[in-house]
Amino acid sequence: MGDPFDLAAGWLQEHLLIPLLYALGAMQWEDVAYGWALFAVYGACQVAITYVVCVPLEHWRPVERWPDARAVTVDVFYTVVSRVGVLPLFTFVLFYRAQVALNGFLADHGWVPPTLERLFPFLLGQPALTFLLYAIILDCADYWRHRLSHRFGWWWALHSLHHAQRQMTFWSDDRNHVLDDLIGALWFGAIALAIGVPPLQFPLLVLVLRFLESLSHANARVSFGRIGERLLISPRFHRAHHGLLAAGQRSCNYGAVLPWWDMLFGTADFGRGYVATGDPTGEEALASGSYLRQQWAGLRRFAATFAGAASPRT
Amino acid sequence: MRVTRTIGLALSLFLLGALPAFASGLAFIINSGGASISLVDMSSLKEVRRVPVLREPHHLALSPDGKSLLVGDTVGNEMLFLDPVTAALQRRMPVADPYQLGFSPNGRFLVVNGLARNQVDVYDAATMQLLKRFPAATMPSHLDFAPDSSRVFVSLQGTDSMLAIDLNKLAVQWTAKIGKTPAGVLWHDGHVLVADMGTDYVAVVDPADGHVTGRIHTGKGAHNLFIAPDRKIIWVNNRAGGTTTSLDAATLAPLRSYAIPGGPDDIAFAPDGKLWITRRWAEKVAVLDPASGDYQTIEVGRSPHGLFLNPKGSVAPSIATR
Image (tube, rainbow over all chains, first blue to last red; front, side, top):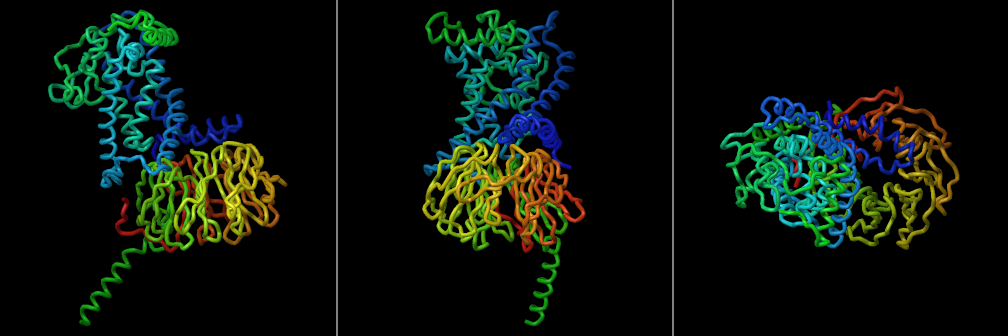
């Protein structure tokens, strides 16, 4: 019996995507379509597992209760688009192929982009260990991406969309401006060039990491305890980062999965409780607008930072 | 001394006796999406070992001297040289985007298609020195040679065209429109046959100028084609239709169609007359008995693609993977 995720993606490919590509005369994209099918299946499973775990948690021990939770709906849309729909396709078509092309260009000129496995040959044949090392390095890189997104005004103008949510739930992990996502993709593209990030070799572990990222946004009074919170980021730890007082260019708890980088670089704050979230300096459209209004407001604020007018408050 | 020799002989026989499970041949199955090579015992049809590679291997080719099996890892940008008998790693070599590869019949050239980078590289097979790079927009995928090794024909899967390269002059001979999405290429009986994945036919192409002289309907998404060792039957895998079609090699008339779901792709021929067919989206290899139409299934890794059967192969007790 093969991997059920792969078989599901294969079914999607065979019965939906290939007939569609064939009808459209676009069969040259069949490999890309299969890559997207894999992303989509794993993404759908990420969403489903996160839903099954987080919804009971949020009902059991909510930090806040809202009479009207309509603002959460748009976050659901962000999640589906990000994990199942357009973004994985975009990532696969552009990022993946660009990585292949750039790596090939460098190889032509005598420089083979290193991979962890080439640097440490004992890793070949040790997929779990290899993945964990990649995950740790990528998590560190993500810490710095995130920290810099707060540091620069133009970047914060985009990233503040993520922080504007006053009704933060596990759905909020993916509420990002598309330009912020694009910068993130380029960031990881650069990292991939340095250490050769494997594209689809460890999907199950990626699923676990994405689950932890979603969980950290949950509207739930969940802590991992004194020691556990220093090993993995909990909803309590990450909530402090989204707190009203932490919004802006000087925040705390930037990590995504591991709190180690905050501890190492002096930005960890384990002392805050379950604070209210949101960005009091941001405009209302970012918090409660529709998807398009949020994107437009983010873009406008981003442009304003370059025009020198009405730069986002810090 | 005699006792020692006897014990040694007995031990050797015992050790040989421990190998019969792998003694009837070794199959190499490239798992493109799983960054690995499945080694399959050809008698039990079971995977006996999975060899990790760097990123995304697709195709493979046996060196002219038969001593190395070359596996191209596209995203890893390297060529692996494996022992075709034991699967032990011989060496690694940096190569940009090695997707499809093949040695010319005279063994002089190695041609490597870079599908993502839109290039065709011609190497001196003896020294592995790059002789010339040909820009090939877009998506050069499959290839085959003229029997005299004078030319290589490359399908451009991202376009409607095919490219012919004169290997003696190292110059493009012609580029011609073939069909919607040209894929598998096979030289046969003075013609070049090209499977057109965007349609349901195999185009018959004049190798002199790329003119299409005929079309043979096989099935939706005609993707790849191979000629049987006895050269009597040409086998065509139809990707969208999920079928494998046999053609009479003498007349090119369709003979029979077999249902092979899961994206049939590459084919290798076993000595017992069965066809080993990779099923890209099913994580499986089908072992088809052409007489009965039944097939057995071998579980392998994600997106199995290129494959190589070595009836004399047996997996090494300890395969070096680095």
